[in-house]
Image (cartoon, rainbow, N blue to C red; front, side, top):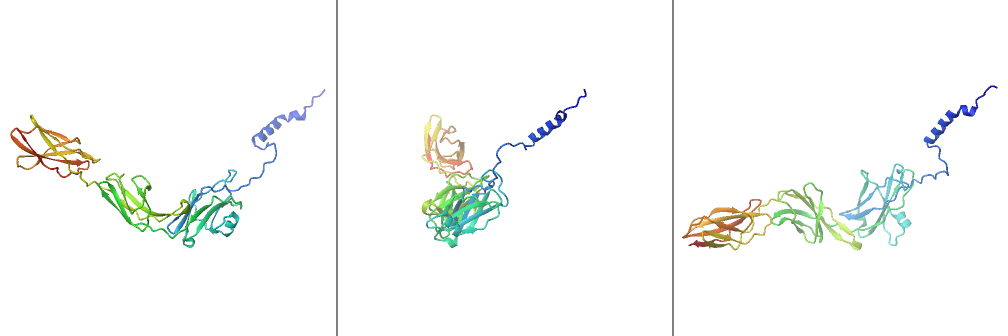
Length: 334
C-alpha cells in the first residue's frame, strides 16, 4: 500500500512559526474592544496670582499629559480668563470674562504679566483651562481672586552702609510695610525680613563678602491678600571692618613680690583678637610691652623695685583695628 502524507502534518512547522509570530506581534489580543482615548488635557491645579506694581502676575504649571497619562495633542493652547462676578457662577463668569493672550512658553511654568490699571478698585477672578490640538478642553483650574488697587509705591534711594553691628539699610518710600531681600555670594535673592519702617539692620553679614540688596513695599488687603510694589533698584556693598573695639575698662594694677599684676574687664566684641599692654616709667612716654590673648590679664615681670609705673591697655580685633587706650593707672613697686 502506498503511503500518502497528511497535508496538515506536512505544513505543521510553518503553522507553528506563524502562531509564534502572531503571539510576539501583539496582535493576539482577546477580549472586549478597548474604549477610544478621551485625550482631555489634565486640569491645572496650582494657578496663583497677585498684584505687583501696575500688573497682575499669574503663574501656573503647564500640563503636558492628558487625564489618561498620554501626551496632549499639539498644539496646546492656554485659555486664561479674567473677570468679575458678584455672585459667582462658573458658566456666567466664563461667558463675560476677558480672555488673556497667551505669552511665549519657555519652560514648565506659564507666567503672565497683565496690566491692572483698568481693574483698580475691583476684585478680579482668574482661571485657566488647557485646550489640546484636538479641541478637547480641560475643566477650569482653581479660581483665584485678586483685589486690585493703585500700584504700591516702589522704594527708592536704597543705601547700604557698613556699621559695627553689620550693614544698615535705609530707603525712601511712602509705604508702611516692606520686605528686604539679599543676594549673598553663591546664592540667589532670599527674603531676610519684613519691617514697618524704611530702615533695617542686617547683623548676619561677613566682612569682606559682597552682598546685593533690594527692597519691596506691600499693602495688606482683605482675605489675607497682598499687593506688592516693584522691586527697588539693586544696591551692592562689600562691607569692611574699620570699627575698633571699645577701650578696655577698669584696669587694675597690683604689686606682687617681683612683678606687677594687671587685670581689666573683658571686652564683649565677637571678633576680639586680644589686648596690647602699654607702660611708662615715672613720667616717661608709654611704649608697648606686650600683646596678649583675649584673656584680660597680664603679669609684668620686667619691673624693678623702687620705681613707679603707669599702665594703659588697648583691645584689637581680627581685622587689626585697635581700640583707644584705657585710662592710665599708676603703681609703685616697693
